[in-house]
Amino acid sequence: MCRVMEERLNDTRYREKVAIAVAMLRDGKLSNEDISKYTGLPLEKVNEIETNLNNFSA
Image 1: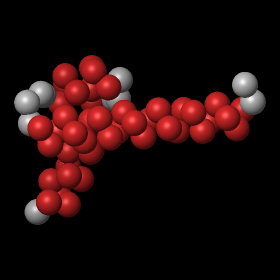
Image 2 (image 1 turned 135 degrees about the vertical axis):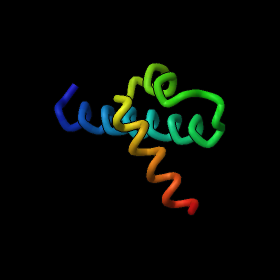
Image 3 (image 1 turned 90 degrees about the vertical axis):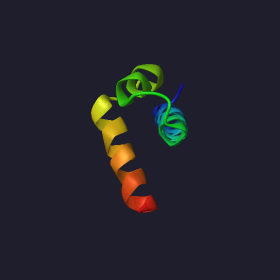
């Protein structure tokens, strides 16, 4: 697979993980640690997403 296609695929996967994390955070049933574990995103990123969601909805 060429490098450009790999980068696009990785970017798409990352965006999907972020979208899943957003849905999980909005649902409010899981801890940030669990969301990090299930999405594969670093805990710091999940915390950042949560902060952005809270700032956006405030």
